[in-house]
Amino acid sequence: MMELQRWLGPWLASLALVGCSEASPAGKSDSAGSDGATATSASGADGIAASDTAASGSGGSAVTTAGGSGTAAGATGGATASGSDGSTGATGQAASTAGMASTGATTNGDSTSTTSGGGGPSYATLREAAAAANRLIGAAVDAAALADAGAQYSETLAREFDYVTPENATKWGPLAPTSSSYDWQAADAIVDFAEGQQQAVKGHTFVWHEQTPSWVSTSMSASELNAALKSHIETTLARYRGRMRAWDVVNEAVDVDTASGYRESVFHQVLGPDYIADAFRWARAADPDVLLFYNEIGAERLGAKSDFMYAMIKELLDAGVPIDGIGLQSHVSTHRYPAEADLRANIRRFAELGLRVNISEVDARTKNVPGSQEARWLMERIAFQQVVGSCVVEPGCEAITFWGVTDNYSWINEEGEEDPLLFDRSYMRKPAYDGALDGFLGLLPVRGANLVSNSDFASGATGWAATAGELTVAAAEGGTGNAACVSGRSDAGDGLLQGDLLEALQSGGPLAFSAMLRVDAPSSVEAALLIVEGGEEREFNIASRAIAQDQWLELSGYLGLGFEQAPSAIGLKLYGPASGVELCATAVQLQPLTVD
Ligand code: G3I
Image (spheres, protein in one colour):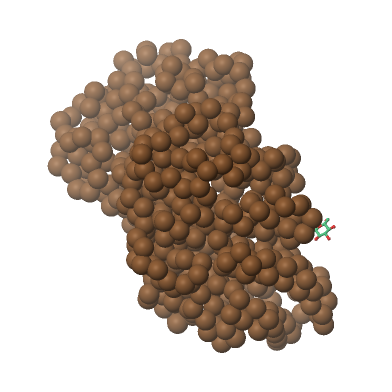
């Protein structure tokens, strides 16, 4: 009970007890992890580098045409809603509206004065900013809201976005309520609206385990289900031939908690994994010009799910399956979301397969972080700046779609009222909007000074302790500088602790975490903040991933820290591998994130 308090007391004493030997820095090789964590020296000569991406990214790349199937080979970066142009993306600029960012205030939906207080370009709308960055800016459209929510909804949609995705209207269930009839009304209304506003359209989605028609079930034979699915894809593509830029052909087929790694949907149960390749081939045959996407949830960061998706997509491409792009949905929560380096590395590896990468369904849960609306909205602003900025600075990413227009109409509200989008319930721009604008300028959140002391163990074990087992500090094996290793661990929860972070972290806020870790057996590694608040201890897991044996790999994540009550103790713990596995760490960083 009360691990941190138990530790905080005798913590200083433990330093004297637990054996720690100092060693001089040894030679180093870059720890380029297989999963894309690149190491460049961030912590000076003697540390194993954590990620160190430039704060402001370089812009998009040469443009490819909208529509038309630029499969694999040619499909890179940038896109426009209406055909090709030669513009290149924005370059890093001074950050925007510093004043605004910190107040969390909203501005009127159509005020023209926007960001880039640093004298950079200013844009009246996201649509303008995205075009300048050679990216598409999209929104999921709620058919009922478009029909009934009045002018503000449609005006905001038309003014700010050049790429729309029907939120539900083009899913199989809503389109085909019976096996012999279609209801095109809602879908037509959205496509007609988009054409009227020179917006491109991405259909969503032919094959998904949810919102399938009630007449589709596992009682169907493989040939019956194949025939029904093939007919649906052909019928729908024929209806919208030449009117859609792209389609999400298959959505959310991966579930790494199953034995196969595939989601146990009606499609996988009846057809096995081949339904994925078949759906893409049928779509290509039905419409050779429309772009075909695979879309996935929770695969934004490097890890088991995105690794499985990567291997699956690569295998399909190697088999000649026509896939033009992938969508990383990015339904984030501001309390814990992918770090910039992580998301960018993931975007890059898919782009290197010749695919267009879309950030396809962005929204943010903000209420997982205790605190004022102003504080929550600032964290949302930083999260959107990070996600949009990462797409803008990675040439392989061509579009960012928000999963809705205004906080009024969001699926997340079904779980309790939330503020997950760019506009508030009065269609006022939220700080989140400025975050997206900065992102389109290629301005990524800035990581401040490291709040972790002795982060590279240059001062031995000063400031650190092992929660169990033995802590030794020595030259980092296969690296440079020092590393701390905990051996003799008897539980996955045992690890390395820096227990006195109260002063550094008690004001909370958006933070960037990263650490280079090494284990002597394949393991899952975790990082958590141990927080004592109102006498209660809570463990706030901030990052976790599986890492291979005997290589330095980065564990990272961005987080939003808030408190219900004033904390009385805060510590950072690294742990996770099974009992007996040695856990080593260096270049441990916790840095405040700021707009500029
Ligand atoms: O249309 C019916 C309406 O006739 C009925 O009166 C009403 C009451 O139950 O339900 C309406 O259907 C709802 C539909 O949204 C349209 O509003 C469904 O119940 C509701 O489940 C459905 O939710 C959608 C959800 O997908 C379905 O799982 C959300 O709006 C939509 O935002 C969400 O989107 C998904 C993406 O497609 C894929 N990625 C995840 C994302 C969030 O779950």
